[in-house]
Length: 162
Image (cartoon, rainbow, N blue to C red; front, side):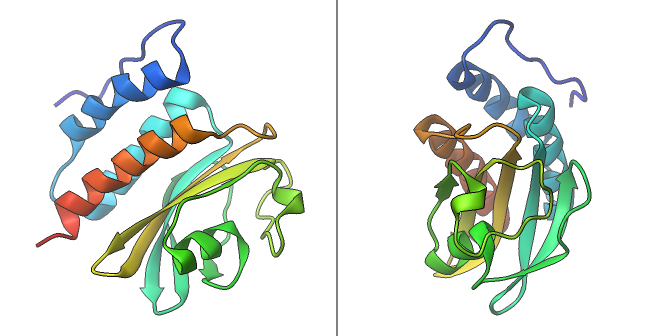
């Protein structure tokens, strides 16, 4: 197992995701928290996003902070609040180009300008969400959605399909 992340130089975002996905698979173990921590670290290092982390479903309708990389974060998020709550509630990826324009956005950091949240849904229930904030407006698109959903699918296959 390698603890060194290898990133392609002068690469597109698509190429970076393609380069890190096998590295994510290579560091995955049977411990969910360890995997969440390493995935957050890899995504933060690869793209230098403002904040990358996970919120886990702590009880029905409530997300609780999990492993993350970046500044301090909100500890809990109800399913009826913010971008994370919307993704968890609707069980669909949400991309927001301007978080200040999103109704009910929870401003954990005023530096966050855009966001993508990908839920992990298993057996019809949201188990966790991958939350990525950027300090650039409109920083996420279908490429990010495709690859982040693949990363979340790795977690689902490893930890939630028994």
